[in-house]
Length: 249
Image (cartoon, rainbow, N blue to C red):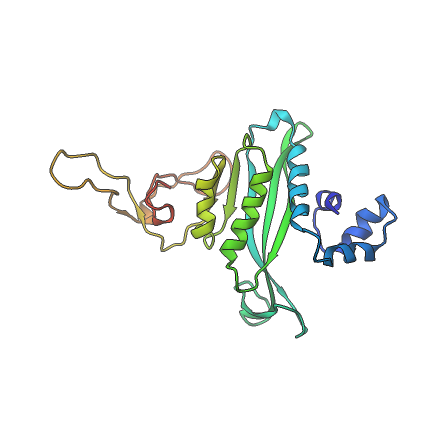
């Protein structure tokens, strides 16, 4: 099963993996995999660990300096029936059914991207590490943090890992991961209403507490320029936000 995940560009289902990969490597019937996956006594997190371990081991030693990327996101899976466990009415901004709501499951996923050589050039391959079904008892932030922490414990600390996510995730348990693992950094979207502040001014020698941060910064104050390649604009400015508990972002 893990080999099929690493081999396929897309993992649609167990049946899809069995039809395209597993059946060519083994005579094990499809029902055997269904039975194994639904057995409560089986620790499915082991599959996540094996997937991460095998993916990282494929990185050539000459590319050990290249970062490994972990991407977290959540997705909605619409269900037409009413007997699915943990199925509920969910808000989906990308829904194409004429409404922003759908009846289905919400899954938090983790994707791992690692560098390899192809035709003498560096190419990043991506594999799905795992899913967590949101049951509304555990927050999506906690589910995402658990997935990332589990993957980080499998990887060697010599690898620089960059966590990618949208503006919903850089908070609480997910942000705490950056402090927990020395080789983990985060690149994320910030909400448009996120408060940005300049760096604290130099000490004046006067009485009173030194300012912990500078003046409020508006987004249009960040100077944008053309990158070396691409048709987008890029700008950089060290700032302080509340996302990082007063630390520089």
